[in-house]
Length: 333
Image 1 (cartoon, one colour):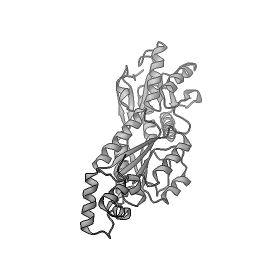
Image 2 (spheres, rainbow, N blue to C red; image 1 turned 180 degrees about the vertical axis):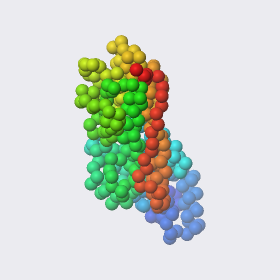
Image 3 (cartoon, one colour; image 1 turned 90 degrees about the horizontal axis):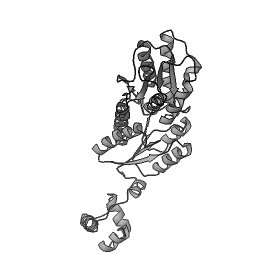
Image 4 (spheres, rainbow, N blue to C red; image 1 turned 90 degrees about the vertical axis):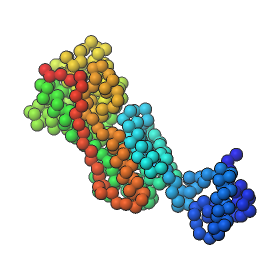
């Protein structure tokens, strides 16, 4: 059984309150007694409970991270950026996944704000502004990644998703494509919406008309892109290029196109968004818009530690830029 405060108190012949004072570095204990208790704690291999320390108002040296999914490589890269930076501060990362379930998002935030961590990084999609504003009253630092809120009092790290959509579409237009399909993410995704707006703006700027036939709703998963391809192939004339709102769906489109006997990029150009590791491993390798995903995690973590240590970050809203990664899945016509 694990050693308890009662065990330490009995061995030192002091009260549990005295042991608690030593653990939480409070005054009222003589130096001789303090050293005696610390020595016994070491001999008995006693480690203070992090939750108990948090409830006592002391640092838990733990950082909370809430993300929708750990199986998607996009989120894996976010975690990597957070964890690497947290390690520099000797903090332990406490990771929770919500599977994009609205109730789970709130449940995890409520759990973390109960003294279990010193700060929280949030990637949530269903918490509304009223909840976030109320969260500020709990006096625990938090930073949002991919925030949809314009409130200037909220700290966040984001990517310019409108730019990403514009850049991908412009690239295809400059290759000579005029019938460019867009495969979107879930309707709840602000990232997908902004990329779609960038797509439409690029079409408009280059004198091309947007038609609803060239829009297909996906789900940010490969199977969503796979199904989207067959929906788009029913349109006449067929699109000559597809911009998928993330790499997972783009890889799904690529797989479906090859299964249907289409040559990529000779008969269909495909571009994605994110630049996950798999995008360089498929055949042909996927052209994509690179998001600085790991950097998002790093910057959010740097910001949360500034807040934990009562330092005011220089920016409340950080917006990172994207870049085009040219591979083999697109071709001029």
